[in-house]
Length: 475
Image 1 (spheres, rainbow, N blue to C red):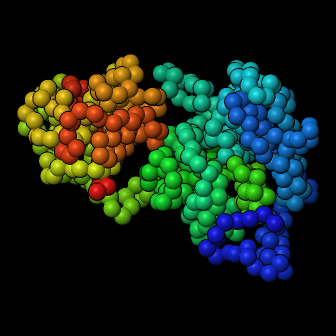
Image 2: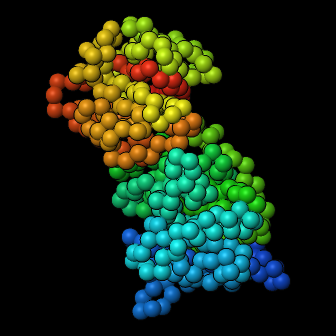
Image 3: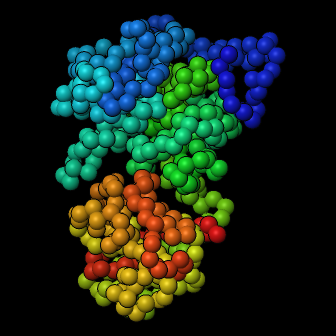
């Protein structure tokens, strides 16, 4: 019997007859929403793996994998046919023309030869997005979010077409563990059978580059989770969206075999597939901004800037900052210097700051733990920490680096003209920086730099806007 860990409203420690009735009810609900026989649709299950192959997509002895067996059986109940392959080279306009939807349990870049040898041609990658945009369905689970990291496009080569379509991109995961998931939209067909919240043992992905266009269905509650990557506000773990004329459904759950054999998960997958194919109704209005804003201001967080007043902020250096369009804006060409939140010194804390630049060369930064309200920035540099903003520099001085102390390990910033977010954690002598939810820098000071101090925004001569500045004390 598949085991579901500690559901609030459901216990599998019931007598066998009761469990059979409950599981039967779940599967009956799945069958009730099946497509009419005359409308049987065809989906292509792709399990190509570049650098890591999940056990659930690895067939034993040349036989079908757990995912292939499960989805095929669910298709029989739901009224859709499944064709499975791990050969991405088969994707062509002619081959895709016979399908109504795609189901990705993929990993890595599908145009690079890896564990699976049938890589697709790089020039054919756009077929996937074009297929969905034309009105087809797309479903991805778990490492379908760990796919096409190196597919860049656009004038600055900062756009990621697959990530834009899916709605977010995997960054890192911690140890497998039991975590709580909250269901936000029980009216959506893939969620209607679920309790308001539940706990599940799985491998939990963290993401960045969330699209404002997604409709969040479920949130991963990070409070109490083990691992530094989860020391952040709760975030989406299951969502859907429209894409052109098509529909996209994604869930980060599904690493473990016992998740795939879980009837509640199976029902969610069937309903997600049927919705993507247009077989069941379900609205998908964009709600990420609203959900994200609420998640990032849970109990214990306070705003340092509310978008309407500069109360509490000052510049002893007379630096040029102004309140403009709900943001604190460093005035390009004006007097350089720093704008301090002068109301109090801070010790251990988590700081969130959104920022926007008009060009990748623009230079600015966010200061933490300045022991004084310095009148000269050069006096602050050896005694505080500056988290740099400037994309077109080397890793020691680019966005996310702690200037002069620690390089950024990656550059997940968005294109110029789009808002980015820092999360900066200061605990003891350690400073950790997240850029758009991706961990990019971690540094432990060995010198006598301050263990408490002020935060400040920098004007280095370019126009840079800052908004949604929040703080959570960690003392």
